[in-house]
Structure formats: C-alpha cells, structure tokens
Length: 355
Image (cartoon, rainbow, N blue to C red; front, side):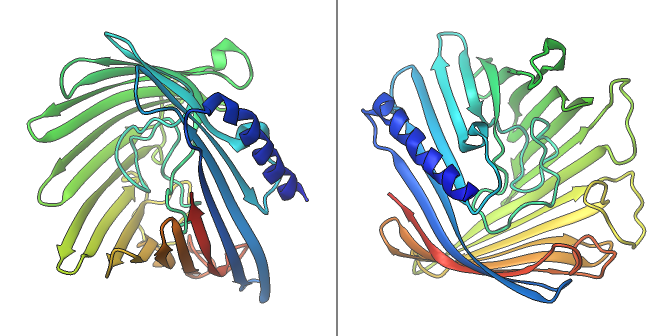
C-alpha cells in the first residue's frame, strides 16, 4: 500500500509540474518486472511484481538557462519522502564569465562506472548496488556550484552542499581543478562533508587513452583532526574498450578495480567497508542493433567470492524492450558474497518502455 501511495504521489507531482514545462515533451521511462528469488539461508522461494517509473521534464535545449525535473518511484518500496521522489530538480545558467548550477542533481568528479575514488561527493566504493540497473551510481543531492572556465579544456569548480540540520557549520563544500596535460586529463580537488561526523576528502584523478581508455583515481578520507586509518586510503582505476565487427556487432569490455592498499593482503574473509581489493569486469555483446547481452561481476579475489549478473535486452519496437536477468552470489559464510543472511538468487523477466 505504501508503494502504491508513492506512485500516486509521483503521478500527481508530474501533473502539477507539467504546466511549467508545457513547451517540452515529458519523457516517461517505465519498467515492469516479474521477479522470482530463492533465499538459500532459509531455503525459501519468493515472487513479486516490481515497477520502476521515471518521469523526466527537461527544458528546451537552447538559451542561457536550462534545467530538468526528474521524478522517480519504485513499487514495491518502503516509505519514501518527497525528497526521495524528486530525483532531480535543477537549473544551469550560463553567464559571460562563469556557469551556475543550482538544485538537486549529480556532479561527476573522477572516473569510474562502479568504483571511483574521485567521487568524494557521494561515494562510489560500496558493493551494495544492483547490477541489474543501467546506471550503477545515481545518487543526487541539493547543491549550488560555480564553474569558471580557464581555457578550452580547463576549468575551476566550487560547490556548496546545504546541511540537512539547518546549521551552517554542518554544510559541505568542495572544489576541483580540471585540465589536460598533453593527451591526459588531470583532475584534482577536495570536499568536506558532515553526515554526523565531519570528513575531509582530497583526491586526484587521471584519464587517458592507450588504444583502450584508462582511468586512475585516488583519495583519502581524513577526520576532523586530519588523521586517517589504513582503510581510508582508496585507489581505483579501470580500462574500457569497444570492438566493432561486421554486421553491426559490437563487443564492449570494461575492467575496474578498487583497492585499499594499506589494508591486510591476507587471503581471508572480506567486509564491504574495508575490503582490500575488488574487481569489476563487465562484458556487453550486441550481435545486432536490437539485441544486447550483458555480464557483470563484482569479484573479491582475497576470499574468492563474487556477485554475478547475466542479463539480456531485446529492443522489439521503438522504445519498447523485453528484458531479463539472472543474479547470484557465490561464496562461503565468512566471505564478502555468500548464501547467508539476506543474499538471494534472483531471476527477473519483464519489459521496459520509454516514450
């Protein structure tokens, strides 16, 4: 019942916002999925019908001011607030000497699809993600950011994140510098946030091409006294490459890693918050323009456990696709991924429609 109320609130909000965007066409992204899962710890089967609904209201792609409102809801779900449903609500204004971004959105600092040490604003190190979703990291936040161009490929950016407590001393802020050195992108910055405890996070990120795209980021999390533990130094990186074959066939390869190099490298059970090494291989093969096959895995080499998802998407009509996936963890009880607790083997079959 709570999930149905959330979906109803989403539809009401979209109706209220639509007059403000009467000059544009809303984009609706709806997914319906029948999910069957098995919980090994209790040897029980479960079945449910899930729906993801996203309504995007973008401004016209012209002029000095642009913006977008994105509303999202999921059924079934827990209790959602209005802030959860309003996924994005922002504007970008272009002034002669700088650019302003204000509202709820996401700024992409650093590089990495799943693991990104340069993402000091939101954090991209947890394995608690669904490998079935198209965008693995999509957390947004309220902010105001100023971007100052320093050249054709360089800029300086500052950001202010308002506090949820209302106290100015709890506000977050940060800055980054972005430029190119030869064929290499160089990015460095700093952010400080307060989610109960004040944290300071400097980072540096590099990106280039050696036939395949490569990227490397590093950050450290410091406490209020600017000290850190062995688990607070984070290094991530990856390789990405696409291969094209006759007959509109494509093969996309990605390999990312996450390391806390000061942690123990012993072959033992790992924990999500301080694991020493993680790998993320991804393979996407498209035998035609309408069919896509995907393999995603999070691998913990030091305890030989993994979480794997195999998926397929068939674009039957324009904007309409049939989708399916099979997801399962593999590991022993002391490993990062295992068949204990709430982890499940899941099979999903459904359809998605964008119009």
